[in-house]
Amino acid sequence: MQKLNRDFFLYLSKNKLLNKNAKRWGLKLGASKVVAGLTLEDAHARLQELNESNRSITLDHLGEFVFEESEAIEAFESSMAALDFLHEHEIDCYLSVKLTKLGLDVDEDLCKSHIKQLLEKAKEHGSIVNIDMEDYLHYEQTIRIIEELRTSFDNIGTVLQAYIKTGVEDTDRLKGMKLRFVKGAYKESADVALQEKQAIDKQMLDMIKTHLNNGGHTAIATHDHHIIEHVKAYAEEQSIPREQFEFQMLYGFRNDLQLSLVEEGYQVRTYVPYGKDWYGYFMRRLAERPQNLAFAMRGLLSK
Image 1 (cartoon, rainbow, N blue to C red):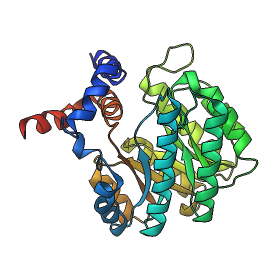
Image 2: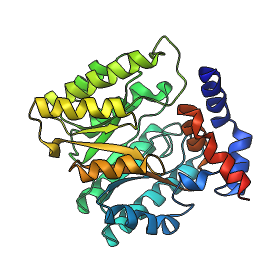
Image 3: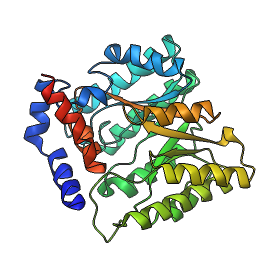
């Protein structure tokens, strides 16, 4: 039943008609609890609140799978403006971007031009740009572009998904980079992705340990208490400094756990999404944990 629910929500996340209509609905269906706002100005107060509670931020202007050049340019310009906004307001935050939103499916050269300009502006501001990993169709292309960019930019990071079977090898492949480790939220075939939670959890821990042992800065992006406790114990046993790793969690989820980790002296970064293209993101969060449907029900009942 849980797999059926997951597949159902992933199917909904890719429904073009629902995605289109969602832009007219605004942040309904409970999405306002996990999306900071439709605009960066809407989200500003929430970003400040997070910083005031000693949490850093990674900011995601929602959207992906752009197929028109004009849309890619609009997304690029919005991201450039976001970098200036964060710098101007002195927010402890870096930017997360998706290459498909910057035009990867339109023209790879256009996409690379966009991401290079973002990295240059971020470097001027002393900040980082983190490239999100997307579905497996774009996986190798994304890694190839990242390998090219890292030769010129040291303020680039990316994400590796623990359910991809080559996860440990790819961790070594990107040794020395700032890496965020997640379990993975897209529906992928058994040919390329692990399907069982136990196997995914084991590989996630293997990838995290590999990167920590390689000396790379490691972001553990999970709400899974068992993985968090395992990493804390491993770091203590291996005398890994707390400056080398951080825990990342989604905005609107497990606020209690985020604050308790801060109180324990760990670095915590909250992944904050904003923007009108909230629907696909929200459906994938429901796919990860169908229990989150309670958010949607509360949103409906409050209207």
